[in-house]
Image (cartoon, rainbow, N blue to C red):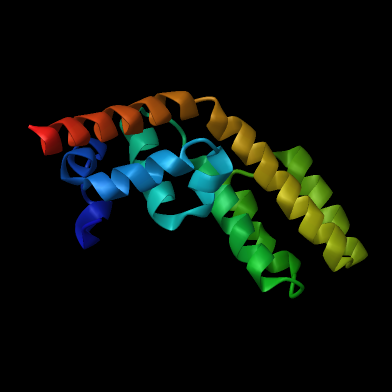
Length: 147
């Protein structure tokens, strides 16, 4: 993907996509989690959601939780405030801060994974349209290559 992809629209990204990239993302598209765990695929999903006027809040929260999980076990409550600013629902915030107060890194890790699962569920609601779009792009690129 071009380095200026952040400024491109979703349609421009799809037009400029190479077949090998479309194939790779298509292979990942059987799982919302696999898309969200792949930086390039997640970037394309972000553009898609933006083009569909969908909230990217869950993608942001998922991504931040993944960063925190990499930092395990160095958890501090001040770091998790960013999740609140990103829009973490209050019931999940309460669970997370309860675990932080207990200072059990394993419990905190499990809570972060639970938050990611909640985000996956929310992203999954608009995921079928994303998958259809990737499938269409892939097919168009294959046809273009044949013709």
